[in-house]
Image (cartoon, rainbow, N blue to C red; front, side):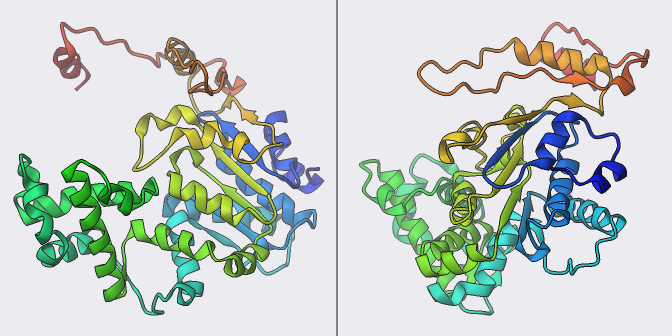
Length: 366
């Protein structure tokens, strides 16, 4: 049920959006095409849960990928409740990035795994500086193997930058470094040993990089008592841009929702062409198999773009072969529909560029 006050405050909501907002308990995957108002839907669904009495604000967790997006989501959520005349306490609602959520968990419960209360969070520059300063303890024993035939590993700064990419991927994909150490390939074995030494260095110095934020937050949730304590305070979990989650982030979010099963994920598998660090399109495509019993909802009305742009997108995306014989297809079958608001737009919106080769096309585009 969508409260009458939300319908009154947002009279332009379409039937598909209302269906998402009205969803009550249980898992809900939402495939949201470009310009379909997905952030609005998440914020209004959270507000609707509060206004219908299903949840208290402090029992909500809303996650997205950037701080700017989190601020936008918080503003829309708070403004809707304010306009609805809600007078409850909104100060404890958790609306943040996934990394911020991990940091919150470690700050509140990190002592369970032995993490000091005053741990230091490293940004990318801090991380590189730490690796370069401690190059010999981390990489020294395996330097010859790592640098063999690979110029990227011969300079400490370059080697640290190269190693960071590997270490981040190991964390994102939840690869056990001990499996790498057991590999018959010398490079992988050396990489695994270096990764373990780096992780131990972080631990000894009370430092955490962004990759280990999620690794250690997951370790925290592996403690049954901690999981029960944390998940008991989370009645509904809503996640935006789910197509950009890594395997580790998916595991963390599903574990956080394992007690109540009330998790709503919104994303667009078509946007994984950007392939943010560690992103796995499988997370969106296979969500229904992770939490059986849920049906996918689609937001396909585009309110942002010229009808010519929408038509060009549909032609382009449908020209590919997204089938996956023996498995789940690489794309949900959907067609984006232009909003009636753009029905009378008569200006040109799509430009075709033809060149003699790729470089010539790039020159024309520039």
